[in-house]
Every structure is written in structure tokens, then in C-alpha cells.
Image 1 (cartoon, rainbow, N blue to C red):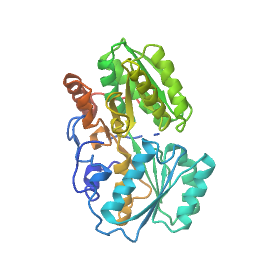
Image 2 (image 1 turned 45 degrees about the vertical axis):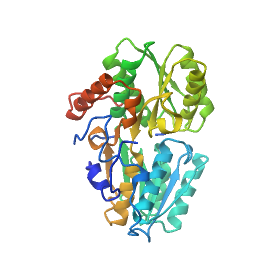
Image 3 (image 1 turned 30 degrees about the vertical axis):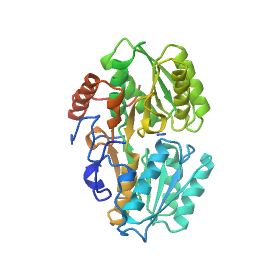
Length: 356
């Protein structure tokens, strides 16, 4: 079931500003690299009106941890945004291994939380088990679909936003060699890969793309090693979809830039230029996990929770896209191309593949 994401989010945020690990489809608003009504950050949330002061919202991360500077952190910022705007009580539990998923979810349920989030595809089975065993509890999940009447599932069309950063990479590369570093080989990350490759090839069919899956979302050292291999093979741009493993990609790029070699990283989920700097961040593929978490959580407070539903957010919903900071390193001509391809994807003229 599709929803108009930006409208629902207005109840959570007062003003909209620039766009800031790891489905089905998708109202044109603004160009891909421009500010969006749905794109307010956690910092822009209104002072508490205490409408949610009696509500408790819990969030369980996958193994990437809450401070991964990417996917899980974005989800937690969504709950912090909710706290500021409604006074709701929010808490997170970090999973150190997959064995922690069910106990962590159960802890919130047993403690009477009004909503329990499972953040990430990997938590699907555990959340399904907990939801089945606790039919009166309300749960929600990001990046997976759990078929249960007390679960709302939110997925994204990652392939659409990844296509646009592929356009950026294909038109920016000087070496005609580009890399992709993925975390675990799961459907959501394959959507990132598929969209990115399709975007590169659409504008630069001669570009060579090297793919490397590290098998982890929480191993920056593996990300650094993967990036070193790809850069050593001549690539000048790497797009990562690897959670905190991707921090290692940035670290490798920063080391090379310090040594006089110009290489780029395309960030994921958040505007990663804010964390790693404009000198290495070409752009980022925004995935508005923060907004999705805030919106569904606010629905619980407003007695509008839609258990048994799946919402998929794409370019049309401002669920994915590019940040305003793209203007710093991406030329106006390339951003114009991005806007053209965005319009074609939204209109249906271009159907972006979900698998490589």
C-alpha cells in the first residue's frame, strides 16, 4: 500500500529544510538535488508539545550499531526528532549479534512499549516471531516486509536513488573505472547495486564497474581493504552501501587524498559529507529512514497505526534522493542530467532494475 509520505510527515516536523545498512513503488516535488518538503532533519523538529509524553517507542538495531553514521543512526535520529516534537519517550537497544534480535525486541514488548521497531532487513524473522507471539503489541520494521496484522513494514526503492548517483558517477569519473562496495549480499543491497550500475551505464556505457561485497555491515577494516583494492585498480569513485563498513571506504579515500591522489566516495542513507567532509564525498544517496521512523511512530501517538500494511518510498515520495550539498562537488550540468533522469523515473519512462 502506498502513502503520500510528505503529507503524513507534516504532523511531525514544523519546517522542511534541505535533504540531509540498509520493495513496491512509489508526486513529483522538486529536483533530485534540491530541498524537499519531506526532508527536514532531526535538528529541525519543533519543541515538544507533550502530545506523546505518555508513549514509549523502542528501537532495536541490527549488528551495525546505532552510531554507524549511516542507516541505524538515521533511524535513531528519527526517534530523537519525534521526542523533540511530541515529548515521547524513546530508547534504543543495540544488537551485537543476530542472537540478540529476539531478546531485544521482546524486552520492549514486555516493558509495555507502545511501538517496537526492528531496524534492518536482517531482523525480519525475529520480528515476525515476536509479533506472532505478542498479537496485541505494535511493531514496525524498516527494509523488510513482515506479514502480520500488528506490524507495519516500510521499504524503499533504493534502486531509484542509486540510479541517480550512478548518473553522477558515470559523468564525473576521469578514469572510467568505478567501484561499488556492499555490505551483506541481501536483496536490499542488491537494489542499491542494480540501480547504481544501471545509472552509470545509462550515461557512460564504457565505464567499468567493480563490485565487492564485504559480508558485513559493522567492519570498517573490511571496507577500507575493499576500497584499497578498487582504487588500486584505477577507480576514482566508489559508492558504498555497507553501513559502518562503509566508514572504512571513506577512511581509505581520505588517506589517498592526503597523499595527493584525487578519489571520491558516494555516501549512503545520510548526507555523509557532513561526517566525512566535502574533500572526499562526491554526493550521497539519501534514504529517509529518519522520516519514515518518525512518521510511523507519530501515527501510533495519533491512533493511526496501520498494522498489516507495507509502505514503499521512492523518488516520487522523497523517500530517496540526493542532498543539497551535492552542489559543492557535482557540476550544474550533471545535476541537470540528474533532474532529467529523476523525472523519467517518476513518470515511468525509465523502469530501474531491482536486481543486477
